[in-house]
Length: 148
Image (tube, rainbow, N blue to C red; front, side, top):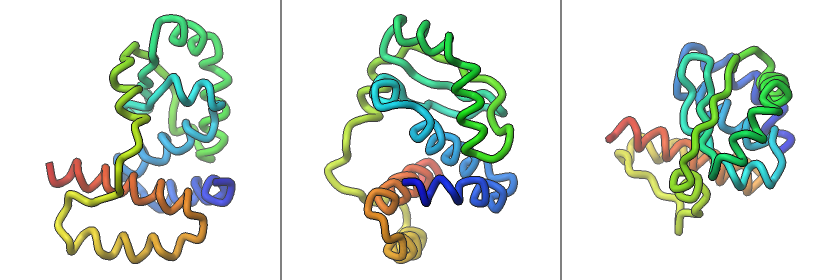
């Protein structure tokens, strides 16, 4: 994952004004910037302008995360290489967190084959299997939103 994080700022700059790419970069940075316990209790929902909306499992997590919000913002933007996020809001939504952490039985694209094929081919060039799977999952979600 470290090699992916090193190129994250460059990917973000290359994406230009793409809200979807910016959101996926922020989601990846969130996953890398928090520890495993926090990651298991949270799930990014969306990025609205520069506000990151994070689902948490309960009020205890929400209160704990509010206390470290400043540190989380600093770490997040450091990974992104720019002040991409200026606010983090925490909302209680245990079902969303649970659904977000379920592993899909297989990675599949619900998009036209002509869009999915080049992404699958490019993904094969990613040597790290974890990064390749993360890329395919993010690309699949993006294509799902476009086709839905």
